[in-house]
Image (cartoon, rainbow, N blue to C red):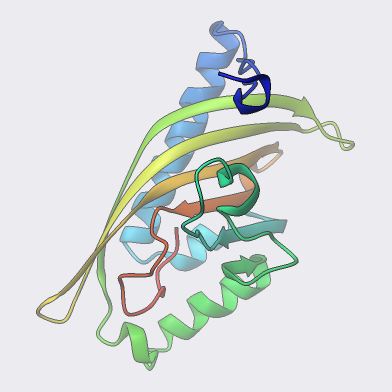
Length: 193
């Protein structure tokens, strides 16, 4: 194989798997499980209270690309291309408010949703300018949605979150959702991830 054809893979640096890592991971796992339960139970206002005011909530579109171009071209970028979601807390609040009116065209009748979260790992920890701990977290999800009689959808993917420990507990301050479909198989994206 020629030198130009070889790919240099940087080693993945892992946080030390010590007692602090496992304690913080346990707290964040509980947060993610509570979040899934709140959303499944349609407790949208309670869920919104767990979001940081400066939240970035982003779901890029995924493209089929030529081998070797995945890192550069597989996902749309946040501010330069179209995405499924590029929202903040205010927009998510308005979406939840609309669903709760009972006249949301895509959520009347309301969907039955069940979310599974797994493979939770911490990838970085830092202290922000306000002295709060921020933790980068990766996880996988499987979300089942059923509407009316025969509509059912499965959403599978991974998330890259940033969690912030505040005086009021953990807050989600950034979420990037990768939905592993390049063509959306559902009729809409009215649920939260």
